[in-house]
Amino acid sequence: MSQSLTPMEDAMRAKLTESLNPTTLEIINDSHLHSHHKAMAGVTSKETHFRVIITSPAFQSKPLLARQRMVNTLLKEELAQEGGIHALQLKTRTPEEEDRMKAKEAEQ
Amino acid sequence: MATVKEMPDESAFASTISALPPSTLLVIYFHAPWAAPCKQMSTVLSALASTYPADAPLSFLSLNAEELPEISEQYDVTAVPYIVLQKDGRTLETVSGSDAAKVRAAVEKYAGTGSGDATKSSLPPLQAVTKPPQNAANGANGSANGTKNLAAYAPSASDPKTAPEYTSSEPASKEELFKRLGELVKAAPVMLFMKGTPSAPQCGFSRQTVSLLREKGVRYGFFNILADDEVRQGLKEFADWPTFPQLWVGGELVGGLDIVKEEFENDDEFLKDYVVKGGPAAAAT
Image (tube, rainbow over all chains, first blue to last red; front, top):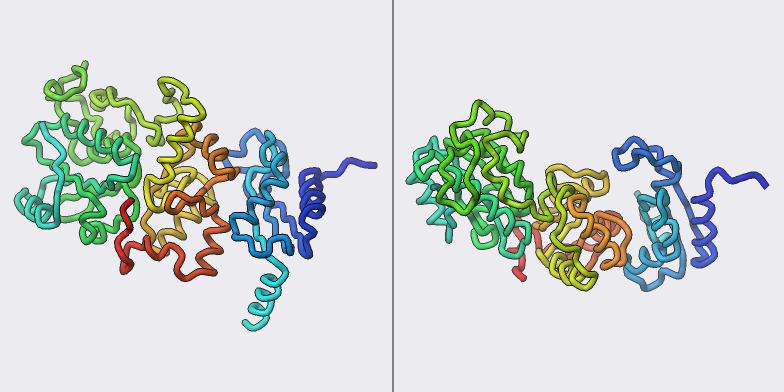
């Protein structure tokens, strides 16, 4: 099997899917937007900055902080490792919230 | 030697200013007792003031931003410490945050360096006491001769420019560190732990958070985690949160930029209690 070019993203996808059973899971790699930043000097990874949009019933009745903590816990290793995830933007929704948002957007 | 004068109320401020010639350089310093960086800034300003003779054409005025809300609003103070340099009724420059070097530079830009009468202060004697050559304009070069008299001031953890070189006298034990962090997150009712300072954010997410808070008129204290690696790493563990910026309200973690954005979108009352204009005065701890 050939090496994946996106090992970080693959790991994220696998972990989040397995634990949260998301109905929507989008992982967007924004690393190229930040690669010129001073803080990123010397970093060779192309997988440092991500945006994750995730809809899962597991987030039901959990405040935003708790939801993001769940994701952080699942991705603990990747966040902690040297040259791993440097920044993570999260949108955490329940299926009902996602539907409500879509309905609002459709109205506008 | 000059000293920092505390203004207890609005009328004291008004009468002090009107008693001074308009060409006096006013260094107006807004602080809040609950903001830890302010204690450092108070020390810095006293030291700086002491390097100027008492009859120098400048005056250091200290105002408790919470107790004098009208003046704070007049000067658009949204975060402390905050320093305004004013002359002839015009604002020349403002310095936000706890960067001692920046404050020194700004004051010297307009007032020249203090002459050597620092013998009465608690600072050690100067080496180059005679009027330094024209470096008042080079305010940014903190190590130039005229500013040596402030070298006795050890940079604090929240002083952004010099803190990376600062080594603490003993490394704090984990327990001590967590105790310190516990206090730090309560340093203000709303505390932002960010990369950089509100006037010079060093990260896009921090910058957006600052922007959002400013847009909503929220009064907050801030801490530059780039200036203190102990806090930077310690707070990640203390908060069980891996990234910055971090917004804390009432000593509790609210979250980062994403959460703050969403809270503002979903909740009209979010942080309303801490808004500068129109809202009730920020609660003191």
